[in-house]
Image 1 (spheres, rainbow, N blue to C red):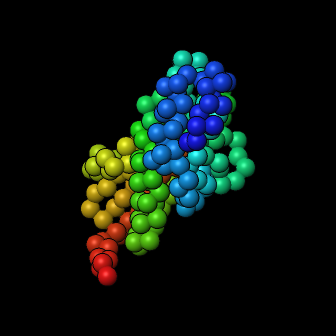
Image 2: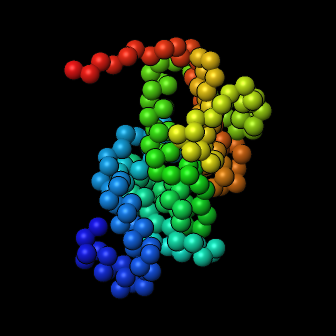
Image 3: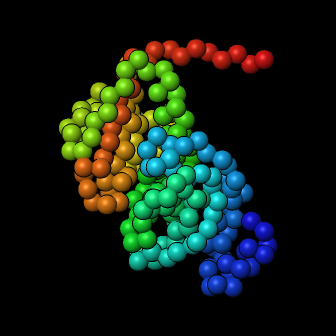
Length: 188
């Protein structure tokens, strides 16, 4: 983040600690071009901090980057670095970190490539899935969106939009079956 941009935010009354959080985000993630996400209308197009806002709780959030397409909510970074979605009035945390979102994207591409069967479950039926035989993917750092694994099955559970809009009908689980050992890639 340039000194001009920092000065601009500070001149608008944004606390220095928030400007520094945005600068740290930019230093680590700024400019990353992202592959479209399976859900969330493709997710953010790239990571780029913008529009810091104070929530009713007194916590500061800022935009994570422009969306892949026009939609009713955007992507944001929370006070502890969490990655979420917001519609101007409400927020839903998807992952504890930006790295969790990136891991989720990578898992979606990998699982869809190697699964022999993919099943989608929607709405309240997602709550009836028995995830007890599975272990969570810690790397995803899931909050409302989680990933689970066990045997030859990987399950992605997306509850972010359902949480944001207060509608259980919007939750989705994707079950990837038949994932066996993927080919090993050789370094050349």
